[in-house]
Length: 461
View 1 (cartoon, rainbow, N blue to C red):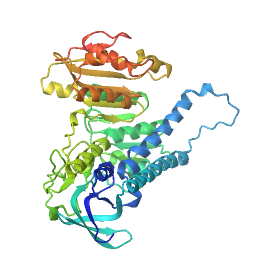
View 2 (cartoon, one colour):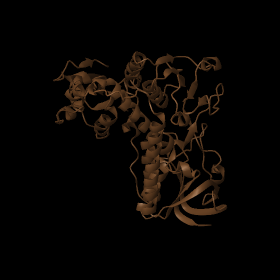
View 3 (cartoon, rainbow, N blue to C red):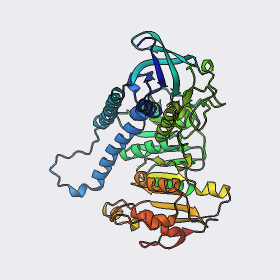
View 4 (cartoon, rainbow, N blue to C red):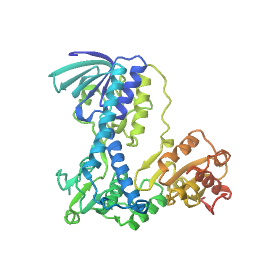
């Protein structure tokens, strides 16, 4: 492999990197991936984010369901209420390991070489790789993708120590349930961890410097989830900044205040790749950087830090590198999901954005309490909010709070991308009994009245 040459060389194996590599190989390009850490093959999402976190939450949900439905069991004296954290964490690691093995198989299947080591540009056509087992090598390529991801932002007032003050990657590995936890940052990661540890029994406080948790979401939805958190015993502190004294009273402090692009230390200046003032790599609609043969995708560019966004960007880069003409990513149609106990999902614009634009809109809302499937499963909490153009009835955005929000949101994402109206959705028959039936009534509520329940219509602008 020493001094190898490729058509397409990918730096980073996360969602942007491995999706791009596979698509490039499928397009006939001789492709390789460089990954710094063998244990992190597949990236943060697979190893320390999306996948293990969702496994942990699945276990927590099972625990909550058993508690909630204990009357379904006939006790024989053997039932224990003590939570086995070893099993919970082990299952999450097994899920990540299984997917990592699957990704390795996909690379072999598509004849993608994987080089473990730290890569850095020598020039626009060459990269030096300090490998983990073969010394330094030079690898040349006609085209490159930079997909080095991001890292947790560090608070100067409370730096990570790996013991009491930890990042989310440490939090998902905790094998003992802390009595008290302070979570600094009320974004998606902080909210998800707050919900997880609350179910396990920790006394949880979440601190967010903005007026509400999840400040980038529709304000009404964020406030509703915040109220639900308080009702479940999670202390929510908003509009305040952290001091070291605030953190002193807690057994564990999880800092989750955002992430910063990992664009340093890879020789971008030698490859004539420009970054902006915040460290993000500058790209065009095809993910091409200021160096014509070098692309970038994922958290290292200034776009939503979501795994599915990174994957889509990586695919666009691969198609362009292979000589194709990829369709630009419609960022305004990308769904965003928070995986708390009640999931919050959003796509398109929210009311705050539409008011700022002085747009003419109307909203409709429908609760899951009127949904047969939700009642049957005792999952009635939450609602759907639909926003549409007052004149054309075309969808502006949709926001869902509920247990199935992450699955339901995609109908709205497709409708938004295709320019459909609320009438188009209302006119589409939905299977019964399903949570998706609430979508129809929420859309009806915008300009008419829902069949089930009262619904709620607001005038908007």
